[in-house]
Amino acid sequence: MARGRPEIDIDRCKGCALCTVACPQKILEMSIETNNQGNSYSQCIDESKCTACTMCAVQCPDSAIQIYKIVQEAK
Ligand code: SF4
Ligand code: SF4
Image (cartoon, rainbow, N blue to C red):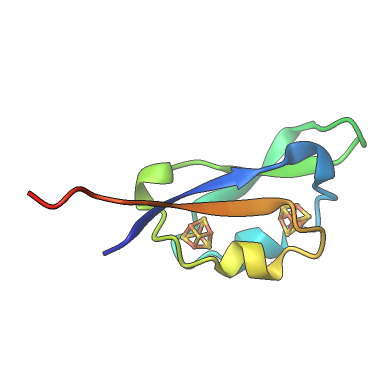
C-alpha cells in the first residue's frame, strides 16, 4: 500500500475538523493548543498509517494540507 506524509500549515487552519472526519485511517486530530488565529488545528497523530489517499487535502476548504507520497526504492 502507498505511504504518505500529510503536511499541515497550522496557521492556515480554521479548525473546521473536516479533514479529521474525511481521513479513513483516523490519524488526524484537532489540537488542544491554538494557532496564531486562535483556532484549534489539525495534526497527524501517526504518519506511519498515512496511505497518501489525499482525502483530507481534498476536503480542506483552506488548502492547508499537502500530501507527500513516500517513494520506496525497489530492492
Ligand atoms: S492522505 Fe489519507 S490517510 Fe493520509 S492523512 Fe490524509 S486522509 Fe488520512
Ligand atoms: S479541513 Fe483544513 S481548515 Fe479544516 S481542520 Fe482540516 S486542515 Fe484545518
